[in-house]
Length: 287
Image 1: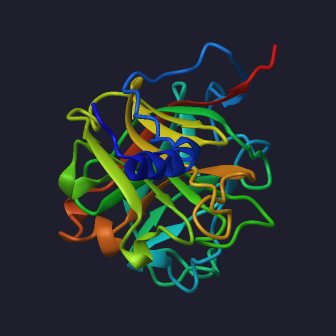
Image 2: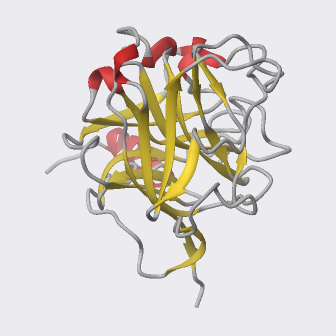
């Protein structure tokens, strides 16, 4: 085939740029725990009673002012009615109730209680594989989540980064959602990088919700099948990749809000419960 000298020069000039910017790797649908990772942190929830305070704290800072996204719950701290371990599982349970301000001085007048558990101040990780085996609430108005946030001093939002391993809203039950939020990509800009996958019996059976986070990409799956990928575009943490610093884990049920409450709150569906069989964190073992 005859190629003009000019065309050949154009092709040669373009080749280094193309070589320096290869196409992104495709999402491998086969997920699960990599064979060269080792367990570095876990809670199997074997001891009945309140969650282990060496592993878990409670986020309550917005109870008085009201929670983000227009959510309707009060998050309690170390209150067995909202977070307890029984029969080998962690139970996070939301109730329709109004609290006594004498015993709960940070109560903001909410009609619902729940729990927002966090490893902030207890454990944090940079890169790894996180697996949470859970059964989710399906009541209309529930908004269950398994997610991470940037640890201090990178705990500002969205610049510190957020990874939503699992979000599930009761009015659209049986669908698992994954997302990443950064300065460039977040829900306030209406461009958060999201995906979803059907899990029809998410409220009736336990499933494993999984995050594989490396310096190059974030991959999220359910039961060893990946459905979400977010790549490091090497534009730096202040833009789209803040995920080269530690993140901590959160487990919670929110009530109502700008997404969970899109079709109202079913007061007859309370109590609403998320059950967690275990939380396990693995990291690469250089061997």
